[in-house]
Amino acid sequence: MSSEQQVSSTPDGTLPAHDVVELDKILDGLVARSTEPMIVVVDGPQNESVYFGIAGRSGFVSKATEPPYCTTVGDATAEGYTAFSFEGHNTEIAKRHLIALDLARQVVRDFFLTGSFSPLVEWEEI
Image (cartoon, rainbow, N blue to C red):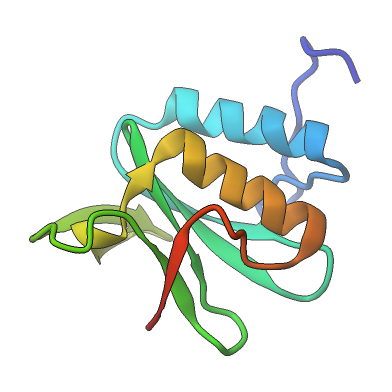
């Protein structure tokens, strides 16, 4: 697939990625189109998924489909919440869970490739 080709969604609206190159292309498109904070679901190599939040230059990753349920931790002292859109609803995420968007993307890539928590970030059980 050339870099000019578009990845198309399935009838249920999902964007399938068969390899990390397609995943990067999908994430590039989502980041470029996001004007408001949003959450997308990224499936890994097994039957697990992570939630990937995109909010400008920051984001978060949360594993909430199978225990242990964990979320990234950025600045543990940060206060307040950011409202993200997820499936048509607002979901508030504590600002302490936000990390740099590039780092969040790397965490998602690591999960997609291995199905494991990335050691690049601190995780907090939720």
